[in-house]
View 1 (tube, rainbow, N blue to C red):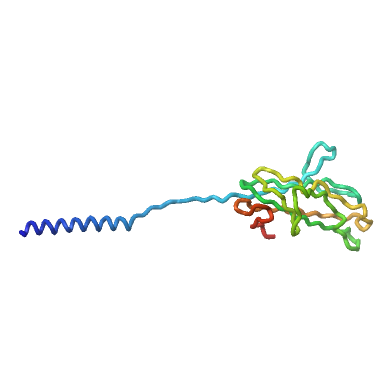
View 2 (cartoon, rainbow, N blue to C red):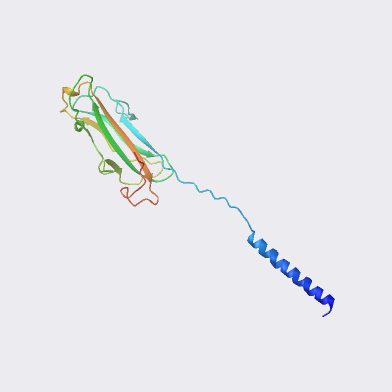
Length: 190
């Protein structure tokens, strides 16, 4: 082979190797960036407490009742509104106490306070009242109760005493979280 052909073949081989090397380098150095934003749904609720107005014409926000006599009922409507964007399971806790008037000694009996519980829509379990169906966004539960009854058996021990009913509401998402409220996980810790 003459020298020109050898040079041509060598140059051709060098060019081919360069092209292969460039393609390989480009393959291993390719870079791209993608930004993915994942937004979690929000679970928000409002605990609503209403009372029937004195004239019976409608509902008004519940305010502290005063001068309650034994054997009477006080209008107090407790329900929960889903203000978030996700369907939610709901539960409510009730904690009542009686603070006897100053200077009065004795043991207060909270069983003298009762409620007209809605056991069709709510189920009691483990100290909570669970709403039996999932609550869709912008919906409100059936009331847990609509009145508080103070027993006629309340004696003079309770004169000028104060009954305190603490109502707490919690929610957890329904999506991928059980088929019933009792299977749901992720309840807020107290």
